[in-house]
Image 1 (cartoon, one colour):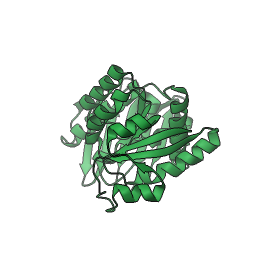
Image 2 (cartoon, one colour; image 1 turned 120 degrees about the vertical axis):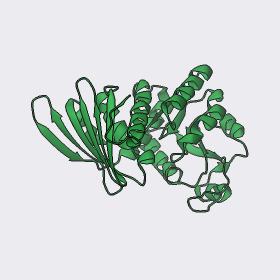
Image 3 (spheres, one colour; image 1 turned 180 degrees about the horizontal axis):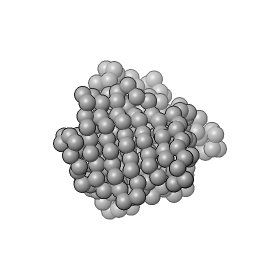
Image 4 (cartoon, one colour; image 1 turned 30 degrees about the vertical axis):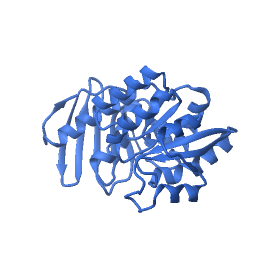
Length: 279
């Protein structure tokens, strides 16, 4: 059995609470032998629900490590979580990546593009293979928009800073690094976002009340719309396990930097409403 170690800022949060069961399901489906065996969190008590690391480990049947170094030594592969705290990822990566073990780094990869580049430098320095993504890259509906010319996305969450990663990841997975400038028009918590490139246009409507959907115009003039549904998280977990097993990155890692570049542009444009920001 290959043992997975969870590294987190605080361990009792939505991703850490759901990933173990999804990993068990995905491993069984793929015929692989992986199990979440170890956990370590920088903060002992979760601000989400007040549960501490010992309580979480007891509930999930996972061994708590006293140090992140202990976890990295014992684990075959590592999942670096802290999904709501990308500002913690560089510090955690500085502890994890020197062990050179295959690592998945949860969304949002980094707080900004400059920090993202530092994490990539660490991976290169220590020969540590890793990838990072929003689970929305794994929405099955994206397959129907591979040749889209102009894209309209909706998405939401409790804040633009935390949840804009999802529509941005969807857009970059379809277009790559095709955007040169971005403009935002905030309306309270809701934001109208427009990004342009040489050959493509993107509109994102962000609101805490919105689910995720895609509407695309194709070169032949046809238009298609799909709501995002289904098991995109389970699809992601399967790709994480396949990466752990064969070492092959599921997509070009340069796209992660493009995601960060577009996200940086959107957050900068939100602070300068109705002004084009070059990215």
